[in-house]
Every structure is written in structure tokens, then in C-alpha cells.
Length: 517
Image (cartoon, rainbow, N blue to C red):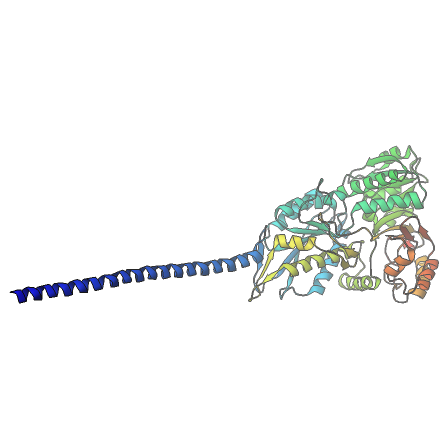
């Protein structure tokens, strides 16, 4: 019995020992479980880290694809689509044709962009606010269009820029010159740029020429209510008065008017020495021709601007146009490059540019295409992603771009031209012979820099620099100082007052930059 009890006690002790021995193992297992849980948590943390890395990758893509306005996606095989809004009908149809020719040359020269063809479509913006708005609404409705070249008239540009800005598009005008379009306190809108000069420059050049070079002290100004014409006439009047002149009248006519005698009679009462009317045809023709009938205007010097710097103005105005001065664009910084451009223009269109802004359109198109190329993100399959805000920023960052129209740098409100590419021209009855004689004289020194048949004859070329020798050197008109001085002597007259420099070469009555073939 005792033996049995001892056996039972022994078994119980063994069981106790087993149980006590097992208990630490259970605790250890629990510890292992805890450790396992910690490892699982660490794995989870690692998984979170991996997720964070993925997020960073996405963010990186989002950074390169983030755009404040949005993206235009161009699939493989689809074209890079840009548009024009130009005056392709109406009284200033020549401006649209002039610009379109320059744009087409730029596209032809560019070829493909990141392996994609370039598609150009367009709308007729006319020369009115209504035309500009209608064209802009149509363009803005097409989400594939990246940027717009246009408009021609400032009135159309004022209306169009509102619509295109709201659509997130970029717009580069080759011919808008109204100061208000790049004034943030007036009609400027984000996304608007221009390669044309600001009329703050053109109006000043005209006023300084009238006061300083012609010695006129009394002047009247006339506009047609268009932002371009009113803005330019206003600058002329302000600068003329600043110089010490007297502005006798500041009047307006309406587009479509044919009888200008009532307003001209009002102007004639004060017998101004100069009448500046920076308007378009046909109103400009009527003003010029009818001014000869008005008492007090018989000896008044007539002055206009680039809106009348077209081949039809002289013939359509008649004898009143003889001796008239017209301010407008001067092209180019590199004569040989412009000569090459003119050759291409004539080959493409069958004739010379009908106005003075074809090179501005060419420069604008190249700036736009270059900006698209810089900001486009290309996938492995060739798909392009172009951010609209990035495109605006790229155009706006244009700095010292060497264009046909000079060195272009865009400021924060869209003015890319400096105003140096301006000139004052005079219409002469002696169309070809005089210009040919002067060109032959120049060519003795210029060799291939100017050619008789290049249609680049200038009258009163104005550049804001200090020294005429420097001007000639910059314009590639001579290699050495002796040549440059000889060139100055070969030109009929050189006026140097303060900084403006004027070169006198005949321009024909037909208003062409040419002596003819």
C-alpha cells in the first residue's frame, strides 16, 4: 500500500515536473507568437514603405504630368495640332494672307515634332471684335488645338484673347499692336503674346520723326475707334505734346465711312502741319484723297502707319499719297535670312508678302512650335502629353530668340518685340529708277547683302541705337568701318538726332519693299 502510494506520488511529481517544465515552453511559444506578430508588423511596415515608394513614383509622374490647366494627349500617329485666326476675308484680307504665308513656311521648315506631323487649321477672325470672338469660340471648342497664331487686328485680338485665355490656350499674334492688349490694367489676358511691336514704340517713332526730323510743331490725329488705331493715334499725340508740339485735333471716323470731309473740315480749321491717321483701307484712302480739298490742309504733311503700308494704298489714294510718310515694321536683323525667306514666300504663294508682317508670323510660329517641342512629354510608344500651362510658361520664357524680326524676348504680359524693328517710309512718284540707282550704289559696298530684286528697299529706316556705324554693322550692311562710312555716304541722307537713325531710300508709290524684277 505504501509502495503504491509512493508510486502514485512519484507519478504525480513527474506530472508536476512535466507540467512545470511545459509551462516555460508555453510562455516561450507565446513570446514566439509575440515576436511573430512583431515580425508581421514589421512586414506590414515594410509593405507600407513599399506602398510609399509606389506613391513617390506616382508623385514623380504627377510632377512631370501635373499642369495647372491640363494636358493635351497626342496618340501615336496623330498630328500636333495648331490653329490660326486671321483676317482671310474683308478689307484687310491681305493681312491674313501675309501672315498665313509666313506661318506655312515655318511649319514646312519644322517638319515633324517628336515624330508627329504638324496640322494647321484656321478660322477667319475678320477685323472686328465680333469676328475675333466667333473665331475664338470655334477654336476653343477643339480640345486637340495646342496653340493659336493670330489675330491680325487688335479689335479681334481683344475679344479673342478673353475666350482663348479662359480655355487655357496660348495665343501669339503677329500683327496686334494695341498697347492695351499687353497692359494688365486694360485688356491683357493670360496666355496672350505677340511678336508684333507695341504701338507705344510705333507712335513714338512717328511723333519723334514729325517733330525732330520734319520740324513740325502742330499736328492733328485721327482714328476709327478700333483699339489699334485709337491706341496708336493716342501715343502719337501724347509723345508729340511731350516733345513740345501742339495737338490741334484728336478726331474719329467710323469704319465704313466714305465722306471724310466733315471731320477733315473740323481738323482744317487749325491748319495743322501734320495729320496722322493710322487707319486702314479704304477709309485711309478717302482721308488722304479728300484732305486735298479741305481749306487749311493744302500744305499739311500726311502721315499713316502699318495699316496703310500695303501695295494698293498709293494707287487707290492717288496724287495725295505722293510724299506721304508711313510708319511700320522693318525686317530684318539678318538681310540674307530675310532674302531667303522672301524667296520661299514667293515660291509658295506666287508673289511677295502683301504686307509687312509675314516675318512676324514666321517668328511667332517658330516660337510656338519650339515651346511645344520643349514641354512635350513623350511615352515609349510615341504618345505626347503637352501641358497647357507649361506651354504658356515656355512661350513666356522666350529670351533673346534670334528671329527674322530681330532679337525677341517676351515679358510677363506678352510683349516679345522690343520696338527696334520699326521704320518710317515715304511714298515717292519715282518708283523704280531712283530705288535701283540707290541700290546699285549700295551694292558696290554690300556685295550680296542687298540684291536689287530682293524687295527690301527701305526709306527712313529707324533704329534706336547710338551710332550709325554700329547700326550698319549690326544689320550686316558692311564688314569694315571704312565700308560702313562709305555706305552712309552712298545713302541720300542720314538724320541723327539723339538716338533714332533714319536712312533714306525710295519706296515706290505701290508701297512695295522692292524695285521689281
